Image 1 (cartoon, rainbow, N blue to C red):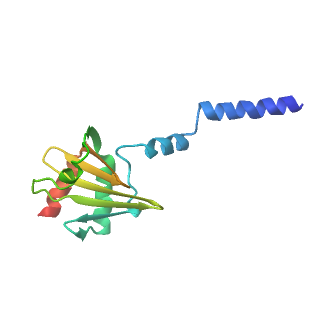
Image 2: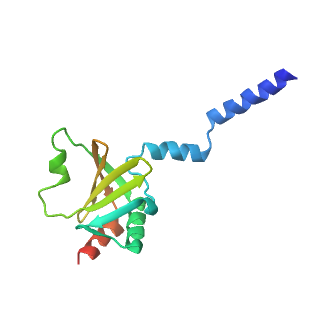
Length: 144
């Protein structure tokens, strides 16, 4: 009788290990995602030092979440500051994410055909390119 119970418990544990639930898989994948999905309630979005209104922020975060990851840009040590403040006259959108102890900043530089994103957390910096037509149009409509 006891061996049957032990076998059932071990079998159940093996099943959970070999086929984890979708929530666990989603958590694990989002933990290491280069282009994470942002929750509008945990972010503040500023452009040119001014905060976006709640409706605009929700729309902006939706466009950011739906954007397609294109490629990762390589930043070599010592070039972070020049990448964070490019010589072009593009004003970035700044997204500040605060979730518990986790704090990240995203700098979005918009161009005609893509959006460059610089992700800053702790003392680490990474950069990637995304493609989002609504996000590019959004940035133009705010500037006007």
